Image (cartoon, rainbow, N blue to C red; front, top):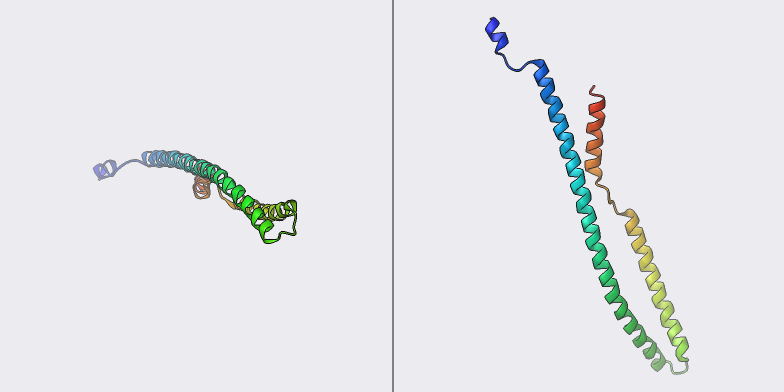
Length: 134
């Protein structure tokens, strides 16, 4: 009977030590996951910003040329209007459109979640459990 008790498996201290080691490993892995998610999010944001900048430059050139075309089309369609009035009308329309686009872009940036919420929340829960293992 004495042999059965000594060969029954790991002791309670070894089990607790193993659990503590597993918790430490889990927390290390969650920190690594959090770092990877932050890196991935910032990499995607940088790529989006580069595409946005290049696209805005090309779009700006196209809009300038189209604005000149619209001004001269308006001057041709309404010869009674002076050329400066045609420029003013087209300029106001383009400025209103640009203002609406900028406002929409700002609203979308404010609503974008840059922090990895799920990983941060899981890490917070595990740290809280580690402090209070009840």
